[in-house]
Image (cartoon, rainbow, N blue to C red; front, side, top):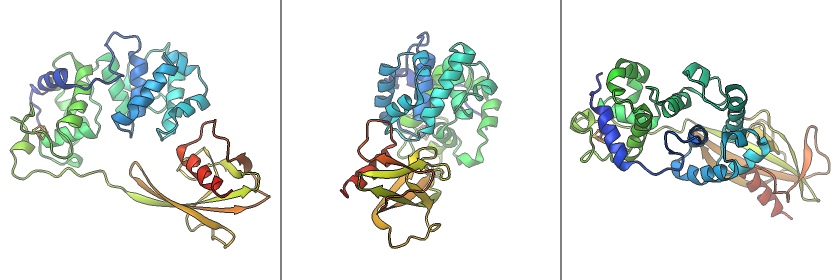
Length: 333
Ligand code: SF4
């Protein structure tokens, strides 16, 4: 599979005219560049740009530099992150910023191998940062980039070895010395022009060489499937003082390491008649469907290691799902 040597120039020309004005896109020389890029890359994992923008602005207002973020407590970062979900990202962001400040003098390491040792940084984020911060010839292969290349060749993305493709075409892809713009430009192009549905082929700058555009037998872009449904039962022991029994969840992947009532995979614990059904929640996280039943009963005693927590305390950090449970339980009084 060969890539046209004009591809990067065309993408860059489009990007120069059409890119969105996003708050983390600061000038190449800005001292905030690493901090803003790190913050936005963590926030954008699994989350859309429009959802991220207000959170990004909140963070940079409160923590003006990477050092200021690294110097804060996890509970404060979680509080500010509240509502954005996937809280492991917030924990990793903080750990990553602490490592950069302490071990790397607030700079990004210069090799992918070293960047990938940072908390929460995998292949995709590592390549993105390497390109964005150091102008290195890398492409962060996200869903947008996969879609652009698979359409250019009219070949399903699971039939393309992207690493090999990029390596083989390195000279053609990175022939402008504007690698940081290219890394971002091609993702932006996938998000705005070569969209999953109804790509803007008629006006697209790549349509002369695009096999999808020319083909009568176009590939189908398959949406990421919801791979499984998880059924959970949540059992809330409550008392007359408007308190609920919580303990750190160390068993279930959903909200792992956060304080929750008794939570079980459905059907593990026989539900006896003392438990009263309160509500069913249906939710989707990434490619997982959640089906959660909430039960409660009044009790004076609680098993170890559970402790009583006031349902009315809401000042400290709490995942939004826990807040929903608290609200439902408070309605019982
Ligand atoms: S011509 Fe259409 S399918 Fe091909 S790259 Fe452009 S927008 Fe995507």
